[in-house]
Figure 1 (spheres, rainbow, N blue to C red):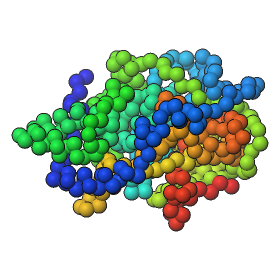
Figure 2 (figure 1 turned 45 degrees about the vertical axis):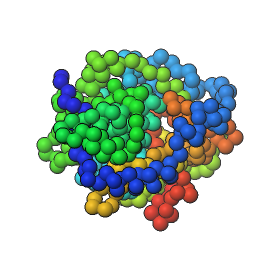
Figure 3 (figure 1 turned 30 degrees about the vertical axis):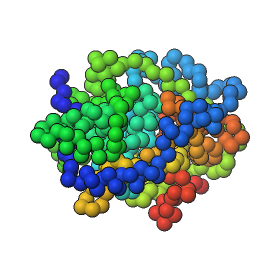
Figure 4 (figure 1 turned 180 degrees about the horizontal axis):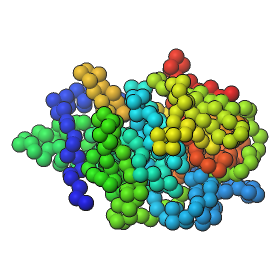
Length: 413
């Protein structure tokens, strides 16, 4: 299949470039830069976990049987399902018309995160299941530039802002495309460079594994004409895996890091039967059912369903991840004089976490010492926290000092 040019659909408001320079500089001052403030050496020194003792019946965090999915701790029916890269799929959660989304219950892992304007979006990670309808698909965010090296995956997304596109494809590719049809090439390049991040941005280490939906037709990405644009783009994961294999992106990655046990280990911090996570425009609740040993999701007071299975969204584990949220110089949207900046969610090198499993609550910290590492979880005493085998939902929230208590909070009971 022939692809159109990487950025043929981008529309740039060059007339606002000078304004962007000033506002971008103000926003960029807020974010810690991992490449300058925290080198790999210092990150490892600050957040290196101990060698964990061997626990009978444990799965991971470093050793898994050949037929065990390292993202869930579950046996797979066909070991070939593990001989491919996970797919990180960007799934919309706003407006409410996108619910029920298709395929969320088939994901091994789901990260819910802020985009901007207080709304949330999902980065759903599929490894063993291959639904032919997943979505609706929306644009990528900076969080995906961290998840991609963690899971060494494929990125399925509709598109991205110019700034996020620069982080994925490199600034030279983006600027070349933006200025392709301009007569004043040099002036165009100056204006395009002013749109953050400014300066030379190298291509990401996963640029060849980024599959932008607006560039592909069926059978990979397709639109459901019964649903309004832009909420009608879906992806066929089986077809995308076949395409990735043809592109030379079918290797099995090392996904060690997560740890599982059928029974809770250690001493719980308290009850974990119910969790409420309040985002600025979304109220998420998880209710534990002891009969199924699963947590069931409601969103804004309504049971949240999967359109494919017509079952309520559920998880074996719910992990609340506190991470710094910092505005960057990347513009995600702009209306008149109001600019919404992209947020960098700093899931490095460590932070506080609450892990819910089997109706119990474990409080501790998450660790991600280096860029390729998956998150691991420890108690405050440094003991590993084991997840229940099965799927996991991660609720990414700002640190308590960053939250507005009138519209943001976490309650666990």
